[in-house]
Image (tube, rainbow, N blue to C red; front, top):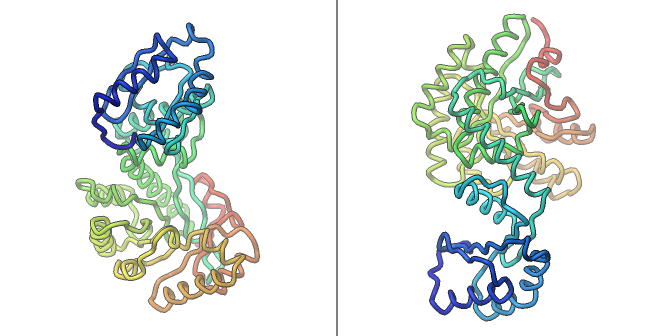
Length: 376
């Protein structure tokens, strides 16, 4: 159950009799007010899973119709890999999140392997955060070159994060960013990426390459970290580059607290000369007035807008409307996810200043960026 529920004596007896009628040697535990655990020695009940599924389908649903308590049922074949109660809670929560409300799911070996990989990545993230090194070799900087429509050159890029871990090899952001954000490790990763990006910018400048700036992504949550701005400035200065050669990307704030935090940080970044981007414009709910009041420098149109505009006249009208508005207000417009000549042409018609996508380059190790740059 996804809520705190105080078990009545009547319901407690019902739960007990419901399970023990079918699994006489099972033990029913109530470790918290929101969930119950039935432990059954499946060696003594060879068809335990099939019996449980049958019970859920034939009997459990009838009780639900009567009591209307929302539920999720998670069935495990085994929990031998759990080392302690804390890990059991983690396993239970991990799998229950994947179950739809008022339904059940049986988890097998492939699911356990997915959990074990998640647990390993999480442990590595924790170690990276606790170790604290800004040069941690497990955190890699990739980047995607960005084409300047007006000059026809690649003079900016976006830094992207990857992990290379001993047991899994290369790990992509969709597997570790949600974990890093959930457990509070994202700030350390961001600072490592910032450090490595700044040092690479310095190296490219020393070798004579023309690079206007490289952007790094920051989560709104980490802007509230104690001494965040001082740490940011310290890393950039230590690399020996100007602040205008680094840029920061934010996603749109979801509430007043986040908005005020972003607004304060944007003001400080502007005083330093750091270019500021709004990432993923067009996803979810966009508050136009709030975006304009932040006075950012670049607005990145999410790939989804481009895909819709590529297929639908109304979406194309909205794309042109917003891009025209941003242009007239002095913002630069960057389109993400450009993959075809037709999409590139559409973006240029829709006031694009910058283009980014697989048409120009997939993400590459940042050390390879110079092959897209010109030397001055």
